[in-house]
Image (cartoon, rainbow, N blue to C red; front, side, top):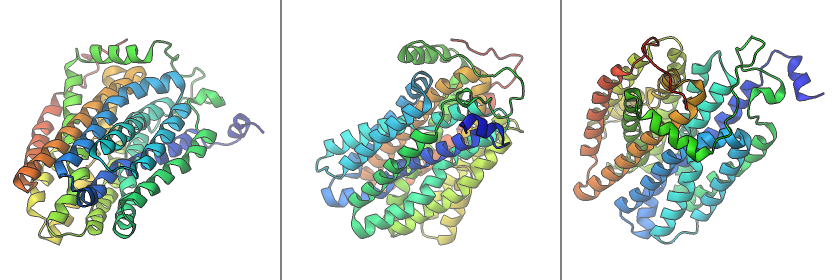
Length: 426
């Protein structure tokens, strides 16, 4: 019996299989991106490299992760989701394995900064947005929330495990563990992933009309198409508001907390495994908060959601420097910061789709994610430099909190009025 015949006999939609495989892939990528926080102190101790030197590599990783995203969106359109995912995962596995052989800072920069940064850039939040837009009409916001929550789940699964491996067996064995998980998922993607519903005779979930809503694939040059999307997007104030808010989002999450929270905890006498467990607890609350955010983004005004998320995050970051000496204080931070760690993604994806249209939502969100990662890289560098110069993260946490509060006000200016908005065509 063919897959098409099998699915025709059952009410279960294959879109959920595609969503699950995408979730697993993003989970692995999240685990990879979370490792710098676990590796920073061991690398510092073994090679006597400064925290600023290691932060530079992490910054390059984050910038490439962001800049590759928009081009990854066009690669998915041109070469297919399955083929691109398999290549990116294999590329990542090799880069992670070779990282165990480093002995010089430039080698870390090349492998972890360039190779791993590029690989994770292909398997980024853009992938989740494209899958949700291709396979789902109903429950699209919920699916985006679930796929985004893979970042939290990746931390929950990998951070305590990797921290324990680092403590007992060294950081190289931890790198090999995450590389093995990367290779393990490749056969499942190759066998079960599908690029779009029509490949198996289906329409997107929720499309009950006879005419498929799938749009014809673009035959334009992927690089030219991506650059043109940026040029035209830059003409809209909404693009700058979305990209600017996501810049601050990256600066206050990946760049600051994911990279520097564990070293900050160690500075205050908190053991590495306990600090990693704190991030994992935050991941639990983020998993709940992000899925809830996806559900809410289908029902509430997304500007107001973003305003609330950034405001809560800003207050949490300002509170953080004063909570390290108290278990209860750190617990309060973990709960409130964790609830909206990446809850900003579903409303941002929804707003991007509304402003630019479903056809170009992937590539435009890719550029918005690029701004996110530039913000993350900037915060990583600044926080590392401030710690090297002042011996504390206090100023970095306070500055990030203030930026979040300012952003909470700016996102209210994003135009959601469909009568006044012109969708850009390329």
